[in-house]
Length: 222
Image 1 (cartoon, helix red, strand yellow):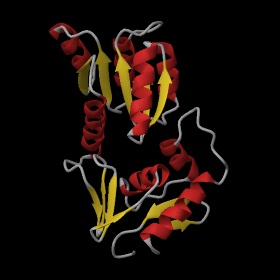
Image 2 (image 1 turned 180 degrees about the vertical axis):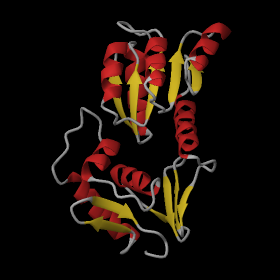
Image 3 (image 1 turned 90 degrees about the vertical axis):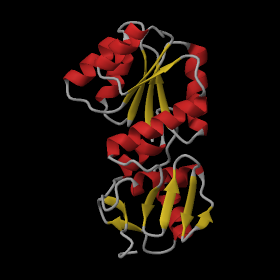
Image 4 (image 1 turned 60 degrees about the vertical axis):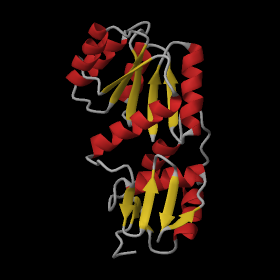
């Protein structure tokens, strides 16, 4: 999952970026509101973590503009402003959730997962496709109730594919889910990770659609 973090505090920003990366998220970090708007225009992020007290353009302005142009991606506000009026203003401007600093990184990760589930119309935390199950909370994957040992990249690929069963995802789309701006990406990196993932899942689960990309098969097709 690709997350945009808009936070001007260096210590908090670095801590959140490192903590979420450890949880398996690809995080891009910007330090002012104008940079956040430019990053949002790329339309590659699944969710925005937004500080309200940003320089150049404050968080409420960024959020309001985002909603006016029809951007429905989840927004979780991170702020030191704990007054009720500030929380109400953020939620009324279009925020989906609110977390007051200081906060626990495990709670932040759980809230992110909950917001993305809500956007996808899923209530249950586990994602299943026949005998294949993925649990984002524990980063575990089982096939026929047998645990699979996946690398972080393999897990991220499976997460992206199983979230949209039957949909074809291109190399560019998969790279957007796996890597942030600072990651160096080899030209065949996605193929290498997919090849390893296929070996662990067994034949039939991940299919290449020539010239278009990859999709995860339905249980019947697998």
